[in-house]
Amino acid sequence: NTELSNYLKRCVEGNRHFNLAVGIKPGTLSNGLKYSLATGNWGDQKKAMSSTAGVSQVLNRYTFASTLSHLRRTNTPIGRDGKLAKPRQLHNTHWGLVCPAETPEGQACGLVKNLSLMCYVSVGSPSEPLIEFMINRGMEVVEEYEPLRYPHATKIFVNGVWVGVHQDPKHLVSQVLDTRRKSYLQFEVSLVRDIRDREFKVFSDAGRVMRPVFTVQQEDDHETGIPKGSLVLTKDLVNKLAKEQAEPPEDPSMRIGWEGLIRAGAIEYLDAEEEETAMICMTPEDLDLYRLQ
Figure 1 (cartoon, one colour):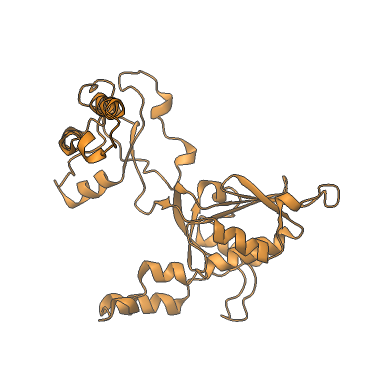
Figure 2 (tube, helix red, strand yellow; figure 1 turned 90 degrees about the vertical axis):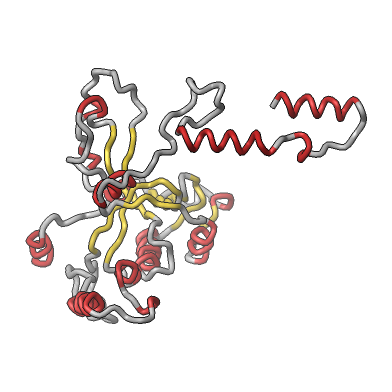
């Protein structure tokens, strides 16, 4: 920085044009990056004490399981020497997202956790198509909303931003959910309807932890013939998967696989926020009870 500022001062005093290639030596950037990647201390070499440690690590190749474990490790940035028990304990919000057993012994116990094997972290997708879709389905933009005319309208939030209101939220939510299940919409978009507060929240941002669940048919589907209260995952799909496992197709695009199950709407990813508004059966017996209602 001082090097660049001195160069700029000289240019200003000599009334010359700036040339960044001359002002910044490429070696400075390369050496800085090499140092950070080699040591894991992210930051300037001179300020090594204040920089974040362990940003880059050498991947553990001891066994296949240890590699998987290392790739899904999370770190809580609390001083290891603290004798506090609270941040180290297992919390109920970890259910389905964090492995309850895998954590190191000793100082880092409970502070270094591992994501569950099926847990997924969202990478984010643009929210504009979502807003466009909802406007076409009768959403009134927040700028044109008159509170006195529709005092009981449901507010719609996209990534925490209030974008509009809707008169018939039940219909809108079912339509958006349907488009997600049919894979017109990114599978990692989360839809949360809060009936009590009259809010419909849509999240498509990055960094949300999600877990897969089997989808249950809410109403009788006349197209597919799946009755209410049955899994969308049919015997037919399972047989296709088993056949594919036995003899994989030559064309990779013909494979069903995990992505195929998501495309078919048999599996859905829920994040912590959406999970709170969802009814989840823990056992097949629970599903039988739901059918009998």
